[in-house]
Image (cartoon, rainbow, N blue to C red; front, side, top):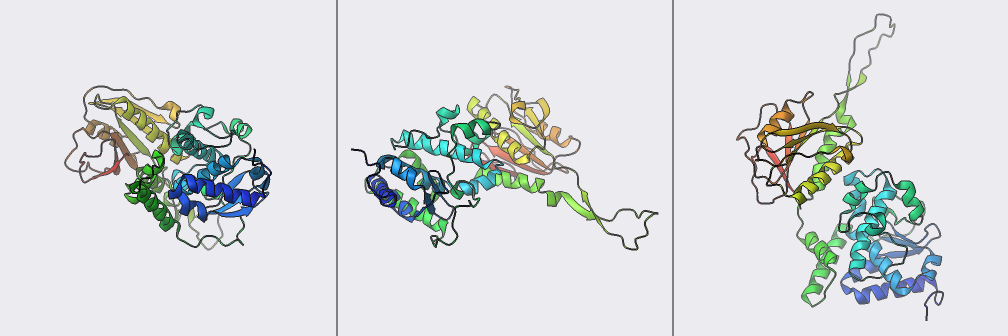
Amino acid sequence: MSDKGSVKPLKKLKIARATAVYAHPYLATGLFKLFPIESHGVKTIAVSANWKMYFNPNFVDETSNLELAGVLIHELSHLLRGHHQREKDFSARDSFIWNIAADAAINDDLLRSSIKLPDHRVTSGLLGVLEGQSTEAIYLQLAGRRGELENMFPDIDCGSCVDGSTRSYEEASITPNEENTEVLLDQIARELLEGIEDGANPPQFLKTWARKRINPHVNWLSLLLRRVRRELDPMQRADYRLGPLSRRSSDPFIFPKLVERNRPNVAIIVDTSGSMREAELDRAITEISLILNSLHGEPLTLISCDSEVRLESKIRNASQIRLIGGGGTDLRVGIEAALRLNPRPHLIVVITDGLTAWTLNRPKNAPEIIALLTGGEIEVPKWVTPIVIE
């Protein structure tokens, strides 16, 4: 017999939460921290960045218990994955498409783990992209499709847990959870790992999340984009200066004017030697796309280099990426080519497996040089900032 319409929405939501906890007891702390608030301002269920859960009673009434349990795990997953902070680090300009990409990344994992969801859900298959990709990678592939996606998923809005932007229906008067979110996430991760020791078998994506949470690696994407944005910060690119006094001016005071400095320039050198596997080159394209996204329309110089520079071009979007090579490896010539650019780049990013020769000393007048390493055990000179791509 269907459970639709048989109990009041709030009670039904609590029953669904109990169902989710019974199936996944290691998520009990997180699921019970979601503070339920009835709201007609949402079309389904949404969660704020401070763990308030807003639910539309009609949606709850029309959705089965197992599907509601899956929706609760879905919403909790946004918080576990830190989507609202990642959106800021990534500088995603379209929060709706970011929500779609985040939903697809989560739902692929949930469905793969046999967690039931409502029929009308976002998946990579429906979006026409490969499964198993990060939210950031999916977002880049959805550019220009907002109108189409709004028609496909008109009810999508998972709340500020996705992008950090407060919604109109999020009530400040309701007391949020007081615990520090980072401490809470650590607690959930520890309980999940303890559950494994006691014989529980969480889905693989949850195991991976918990292990990374307890034993974190450097977030290479956040670190890279933070360094790139530092070069693009408009307040770092402009200054107040005194200009020449006009002979026609009768004003006794001279006021400084805001003068735009030279536009920042970023050069990316991609190792296209024979040691770079196809998967690593595909990953390089993703990294370049991420950097382009953070530039907000500013061009960058892309240099394909093996033992010599194969191609040098100015690009503004991912469709212009061309990688040519296949020979030996000597990225020193690529760095020299980047340093000959006019104007000289403010930042040079080298994407490589690290199997190349480096100069012992920093090149003269070289800007900051970051090496995105596809191999984690490669040493680089002290004048290079290494970031290992996980």
